[in-house]
Amino acid sequence: LPSQAVVVEPINLALAVAELELTAMGKCSPSPRAHAISSFFCSALNLALVIFGVAERIRWTPFHQEMECETPPPMAMRLSRLSMPSPLAESMFMVPGTAPFGLYINMTSRIKCTNPGQSSITMKAAGSETELLS
Image (cartoon, rainbow, N blue to C red; front, top):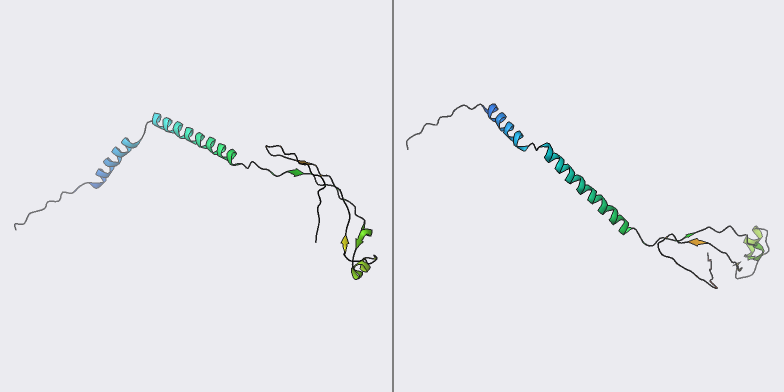
């Protein structure tokens, strides 16, 4: 095979890179009008996303809300009707009672409740009973 001579010419690499950057910068820089149009589009898109987010927040807010009731005032209960076993009653300076031990009284209380929800509820209770067991 005949040998071929390879001629390498020196290239000013810095000049070639500078020319490439100048042409790239000139072609990629948008005009002020393009900036204004893209800014307007992005702001309109962001406004639409905010409106959609608020609408979804309202849609997913729970429909049911707990009723708000006023706390009833404390009631005085007579301890003379309390029946306790011998050692406990004597430690409180009371007369020991008979089984079944405890406090058995009839008590009536009224509580005013309001419904903050979006629907109206009417509750009517007659003869309801509550037992507190400890």
